[in-house]
Image (cartoon, rainbow, N blue to C red):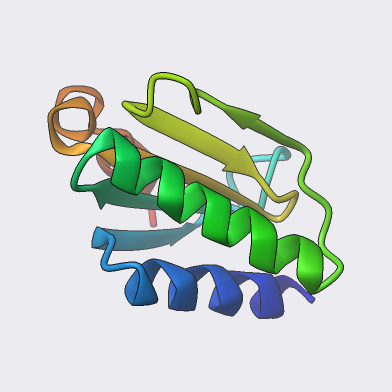
Length: 107
């Protein structure tokens, strides 16, 4: 089930032309989730479209969406899929926070 939702998410990101996709196994470092996935959207509209597609396909496959944050602004949108937390950020936001670098330490 874990790998199924991870593969589904990564395939959607690729199909939607999301940029700089990075998946990090955080299962040994976090009790919140098993994977953090980071990607860059080309615009707020693109970021929302990516989240919409992930949400739609995940629900269709029977996965539960635990929450979506940041959708209105579209600058940094997070979707919690349980075993995966997906972050879709605009380039300047991703460069500023560098969360994927933070979660990569020790991996």
